[in-house]
Amino acid sequence: MKLIRFALACALLTSGCLRQLSDDKRSKNRDQQAAPCAPALEAYTQNIEPIVEQRCIRCHVSGGGGAIAAAFQSGNAVWNMAVFSKLKNGDAEAIFKKASNQESHGGGRQLEDGELENLKAFFAAAAQCSGPLAGGPQAALCDGKSLPRRVTLLSRLEYRNTVQAIAGVTVDVNIPAAAALEDGNKNPRLAFSNDQKSRTIDSNLAFQIKQAAATIARDFAPEKKAALGCSTEPVSDACLNNLGTQVYRRPLTADETAELKALGGFVNVVTYLFQAPDFLYRTELGNETSGNLMTSYEIAAALSYLLTAMPPDAELMQLAGQGALHTAATRRAQAERLLKGTNGLSEPLQNFLVEWLELGPSEMANKVGTYDGKAVFAEARTFLNKVIQEDGSLETLLTKDEGGRLGILQQRAFLASHSNNNSTSPVKIGKTVARNMLCLALPPPPANANNNLAETPNLKTTRAKLAMHTANPACASCHVRIDPFGLAFENFDQLGMSRTVENGEPVDTRVNIALGLSIDKAYENSGELIQSLSQSRELATCFDSFFQQYAYGTLSCEAQSVTSGTSLRDYILNLISSDRFITRIP
Image (cartoon, rainbow, N blue to C red; front, side):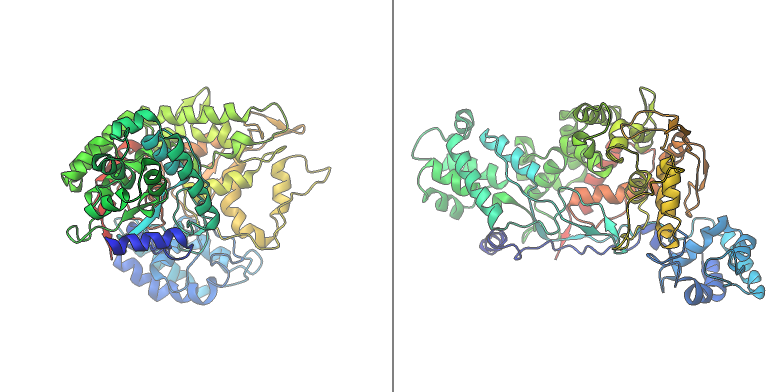
C-alpha cells in the first residue's frame, strides 16, 4: 500500500511520473481480425496482391494522392483484400476498364489485358463467401486487449461533483483534457474531456488544487460535517474513518487513520485529504487477492463515475465491502439503479453524446443572423434526454422526428456547430460524420493546405465554391471521403434553419457515396442519407469504439455486440457487465 501511495504522490508532484500506461496503438476491429474466406484470400494473394502492392499502394495508401477512400495498407493482405473487394461494387469489368485506361485513370495504365481474368477469378471466389470479408475502409478500431493496471486522474467534472457530494462546496480546478490523439492508422482522433493521455498535474494545477483544498476546509457544509460525525473537536477516529473513506473511496488502513489524527484539527485533515493523490486519482490496480481484477471498491468508483460523474454512494460502497461487484448481475443491477436515478441519461453520458457529435460549439457561436446559442444547445440536450428516456437506439438517435427535424443530425445544434459564422461548411459536417460516426481513416490535411473557399462572382453557392477548392487531386483524395456527407445538408443554413436557395441559386443536396461502405449509393438529400446511415453496421461499430474510449479514458477497446437497433441503455449495461470492465493486467 505504501508503494502504491508513493507512486500516486509522484504523479501529483511531477508531470511525467505516471503517464497513461495503456497502449494507444489500435489494431483492427475484432470482426476484421476474423479469419476471412480461405478461397477468396488464396485468390487474392495469387492474383491481386502483386498488383496492389507493386502498383496501387503508392497512390492509394492513407494520405496518398489516389482518390479512393478505402486506402490500402502495405503488407496487410486481409485488409487490402477487403478494400479491393468493395471497389466498383465488385465489378471486375468496371475496375479493369478504369485502371487500364491511360486517360481516365489518374495513375495511368496499371492493368494489362491478361489481368482481367485474374480480377474475375478473385471476385468469383469472394462471391462464394458466406459472410463479409475481414477488413474494410474504417480506421483501426478495437484491439481486444485487457487494459493494464493504472491510475487515472479525475476529470474536471468528476472533481467538482466529488467535492460537492462530500463537502457541499462548489469549487472548480482546471484539470485539462487530452490535447491530441491518433487512431491506429496515425490519423487524428476525437479526444474526449476525460481522455487520460497527457493528463497530468503540473505546478500550476497543483497550486489550484492547494487553493481549492483550503476553500473546501473553510466552507465545509455544517450538515455534511454532522453526517460524518465531525462536528466536534478534536476529531474522532469515527470522523476520520468516515471522511477518509468517502474521500479515498475505500476504507482507510490503521496507519492512514493514525497519520490523519496526527495532523490535528478538522481543517488540517480536510486540507490534506483534498490534495492527497488517493483522492485526485482513481486506482485500477487490484491487490494481492484480486489478481487481474480490480478491487471491489475500484469497481464501485469506475461504475459510479462513468454513469454519474459522482463518487460511489452508500449502497455501492456497501456492496463493495461485501465483494459483490465482481458479479456481472450485481454490476448490471447497480448500473440500472444509477441510470434510473438520473432519469435515464446521466450528465457524463449526455456529455459523451455531445462530445462525440461535437455539439458544444453551438452554445457560444457568434452567427450572422438571429441566433440564441444557449437555447439551441439546450434544445439538443432535451432531445438527447428524450431518446435515452424512451430507451432509444442509435437508429432512434438519428431518425426520431422532433418538430419536423430528423434526428440529432438535423437539430440546430449539430448544424450550427458545424458551420461558419456566415456560411455553411460541408467539410465540417462531413468530417464529423466520416470520422466520428463511421470511423473512416482521415489523415491530417497538408501543412500548407488553404482552407479558404474561392470568392468569385460566378460562384454563388457553397457547393460550387467547394467543388473549385477541392479540384486539386491532392485535396480530392481526402475530400471525396468527407464532402458528400456534408453537401447533403446544404438545405440548412449556418443557423440550422431550412433553406431552398443560397444567394439566389437553388441549393443542391444530391450526393453519391462510393467509399466501399454498406451505405454506398446516391441520395437526394440529408433525410435519405440519415435513414441509411442510421441502420449501418459501420455506425454501430464506430459508436462502440468511441464509447469505450470515453468509458475507459483511453483508446483501447474490445468489440461489443451492438447494432443500430440496440438500445443505448442495454449497450451500456452490457458493457458494464462485461469481464473487461473489471479486468486490469500487469
